[in-house]
Image (cartoon, rainbow, N blue to C red; front, side, top):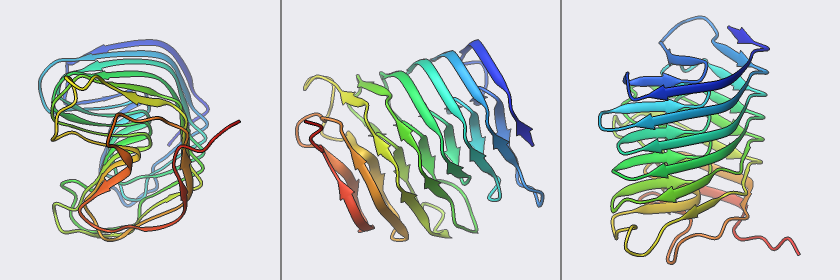
Length: 239
């Protein structure tokens, strides 16, 4: 378990498959994995090619019993060509609660990016119930790619391994931005102000909203499956 840490001025290049501000990789375990009350301030990551997972707190969380709570990642500066880039976790089955991210992502190749988590569920086998509660992000995501999945909170909720899991996004919001020129965002780009793409039927979204203005034709989430969504709002006026 990791608690009550504050790290500053961290810089990474693309030197490994898993890169995290605190933890590179959470493995499968029967014991609780807890990261609580930790802050990473001013983290810089530059990734080139390769199957890289980057998270401001953890690169990859394969532990279904993991909890990341009351953590913040501040002043991120991420530039990546091919990666799963998440403000808190790159790819995850963890429960994430009361976390906050800020900074900027510039994605110039194929990949997945999320203000809190890039990828949930992809490649995992088993039955899980990961959740995000009371989280928010003000990350500014700049897209320079023809094929990308980007979401203000989650990049993609996937179910490639035909898992049985319920993913809940509750009481969370995005107040950053997702931007890119018409020439840099292709037709294959899937962008949502809360979730980039939902590829699982067992997804619930409630009491969550976005303040972001998205590129033309983009919305709260894109989906091949229909989530259960209640009290979900887009482009709320603050005036």
